[in-house]
Length: 425
Image 1 (tube, one colour):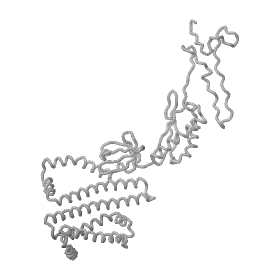
Image 2: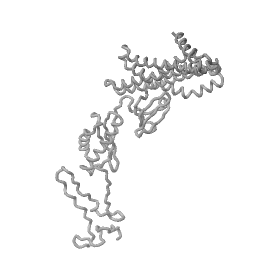
Image 3: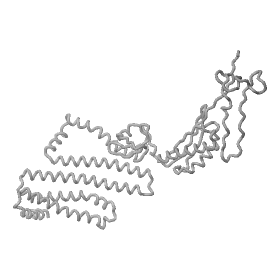
Image 4: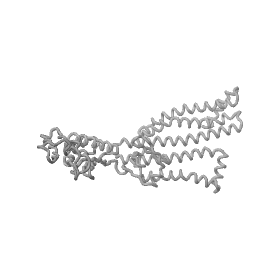
């Protein structure tokens, strides 16, 4: 069949004897490539329609996305087969160079076409896995991590082999490569030392794909920031922070340094909220308010909830509230929602529970006196709380000796601005 194909092109070559030899040879190669292009269209359209392949959606997807590569490969094969028919009038050097060019193009097309096909097949599998309802989040992220890391390693391996095979078609490169591998001199030592970091990260990637200390979309704490695992490549990991910054971390870092992984076993998290309130805060009523308001938080998991006095000092007490959520972002939203709702309720119903400063009157203390009326807070009107107690009577300052009745003489103790007398006055 090949001989018939070459003979047909040789006969076609005879039609262009009136043209210069290089132009006629090039025209024969172009015609062969066009024939292969038309034939490739038939193949790419017929393969997905075969009875045994209609039920496999991955085959149709791979063929449809690999059409350019399939057409290019068939065109290279057809042109290479037509090269003997186009060799009439070409010098041996030109003929050999064109053959080398077709060989390199064939190797590169096959190698990178395989990489493309593998990527398409793995992406299709991951999409189907993520759409399944009966697969939990941990399993999906585990499959994503393993497939993406191993895919990177396979792509690098196939790419290096493809480029190496293409270069080895040249005699000069082949001789240099053989001498480099055969010798154990300085060149081999330099190449080995320079490749050590890359090999370390590649081996670390294989270990991470197997042991999985991190997975896709895991939430990590690194350098004080919490970030999500966005990409796991063969030699580095891309982390995405909450404010859209990116950390680029060598993949070996996660095998050599301790770090926090908040979603390693489960994406569910427990958030904590701290409120600093006054000692007059009624804890039973605060817990009742929390039970009322938490029902309006859509991100709460409906299970974990707690409220305790965690600490205290001379001025305030520290209230610690914990609540569960399905993930990191819902946990943050729950904490902010609880804080806002409780502060609003306390400000409206129990303003005396908010932090305040206290001042004590010390009789006989040196310095200006404080007018007691300024230390008495007005009564707090709380809606729906019933009648409020009357305002306490202000503190009455003692009268100066010898003052008539209950009126204090100007400048006596108890009047605004009057100094407290000391002993000996």
